[in-house]
Amino acid sequence: MSWLFADGTTTEAPSLREAQDNASQAAGWVEQNWSAWLAAGLRILLIVVIAMVLRSVVRKAITKFITRMNRTAQAVDGTALGGLLVNAERRRQRSEAIGSVLRSVTSFVILGTAALTVLSVLNINLAPLLASAGVAGVALGFGARNLVTDFLSGVFMILEDQYGVGDTIDAGVASGEVIEVGLRVTKLRGDEGEIWYIRNGEVKRIGNKSQGWATAAVDVPVRYDEDLEGARRAIEAAGEAMAKDEPWNERLWGPVEVLGLDSVTLDSMVIRTQAKTMPGKALGVERELRWRIKQAFDAADIRIVGGMPLEAAAQGVPDPTAGMAAPSALASDSSPQSVNASPLQSPAPSASPAPPATAASSSSGTSLSK
Image 1 (cartoon, one colour):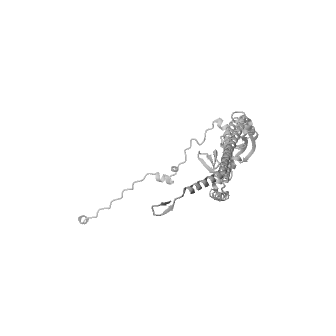
Image 2: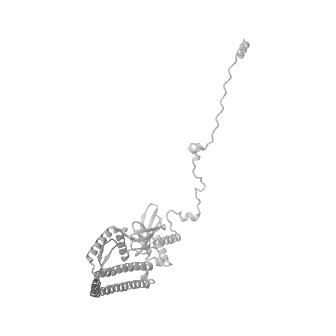
Image 3: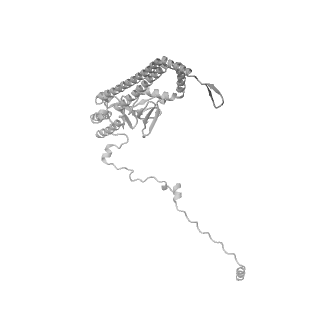
């Protein structure tokens, strides 16, 4: 039996016997390999299930660990130890960032290992794939080195607790209060309200003004003839009274110390005072301390540089320059201002010339003279 095609060619039609032979070979091949396929499928399914279960368990363990860290931090918020630690928002953000990094790394490692295992079960040669991935990783690393640098710097900044939300830092390129800490970018709010976005990889140095303790330093200028011991006693009394009042008793972490004279001139002396304060509260403590020192000096009759003597102020001595007018350039007649302000004078009229004598007048004059 032959088949005729449209182009005029003919071919022999397959016989029934040949079809049966082909079907038998296919069935035999399937019968020989179905066990291997089933075993490979079961292995792949088992690998996927184990990977997903392991990933879920590890992520839950990381989440519970982060939650326990936050609970431990909240337990000391109301204690004296809690006052020395960073605030709750900073601890929460730091722990969440660490947990996010750990979860991402865990997912990448577990799922990547599972994918490679599945490919090996399918008898796929992994050597070319791993070599290509290595080359692609090197190329990606060179192309995105700034991104990798920012990411790694952010991870180490968070792990080392260099700064956190609420801290006032000086990052070199900008300074201000930290409002958000990310793995790539840190946000700062400046003194004028502007927001700075700083790449973590560009930060070469960090000056954290909110860790440990701060120093409140106040310079008190007094007249050169004042009693230094009296000034010392007044300053120490003002500091002791301030340390007993709210909220300064929490912001002052040490007594107000009089360090001595910072400078001495012909008409003044500068007394340097200092006190340890809560981080970030030094400016407010300095202002309050100046206020109280001024009140203490007034009560002790201690004069500050630039002020009128207290005896003269009490007697009400009039100011001798009160009735004097301000100097003016118009007081001098020769000054340019006086010359420009003087009125203009009209020019004097000129005399008209005499009319010429006529011939008649000359003749008449001649006749009269005769």
